Image (cartoon, rainbow, N blue to C red):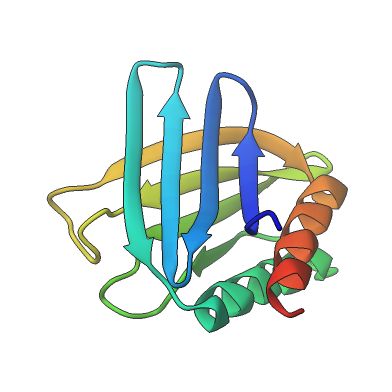
Length: 132
């Protein structure tokens, strides 16, 4: 059985979060092949389920405004997404922190707008894969 994962972005700029077994998740990002990040994060299924549910909730909101979601509220958070509404979708400002809550060692990048429907389907699929 394939492990749960999501990928946001396009061929040039993308972010991927994939479970590699148990509570280990691979966080990978690439910006135009010039800047990349690839590290393992310890996240429970419950933390990722909650993150996916919060993302789906924000994406279903009729307000359609800016929002931010961290994978986990703890100091070990490896990923935060800040969403900015653009047209019928959202652009994302991504903050990756391989060492947890760290202002020194981090990567920030921007992902071009993605249609809201596509985002809802992506995060709903991740949520569904983890609550079986």
